[in-house]
Image (tube, rainbow, N blue to C red; front, side, top):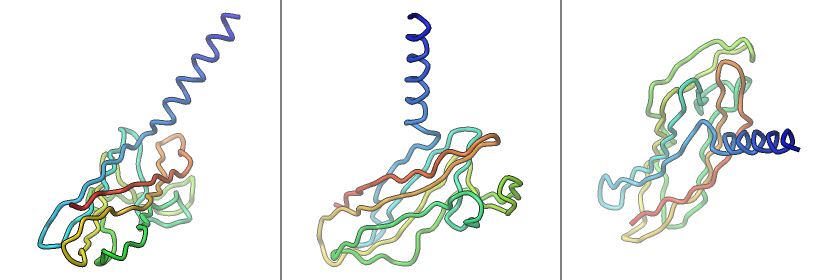
Length: 148
């Protein structure tokens, strides 16, 4: 019986560790001009792990992607930019050169509001992280960023 209890304690702590994952995300909007904002989605990555760039070869790990929900009050300017220390490496596991970030990456999208309005920018971010021994399954998270 005590072995069974010990097994469940280990199982639950493992599930909890996986649910938190090696990446934490932070979302914010920064006003840069009248009706113009930068949306920031910042991924903080645990030591030993790396998150694949949205510009990485898709034959390797799953590249990051950000999809915004259509909003009639907003104009999206350009594409999502990555701010961080981009690394490139040939990964034998996949047989291709991949691009990735360690420690932190900030995904930045510029938007313009159609007038003086308050709204939320909603969407999803998908990404995959690996370390030297394993890869986590691709993860998709929803977000909503208030624009005041």
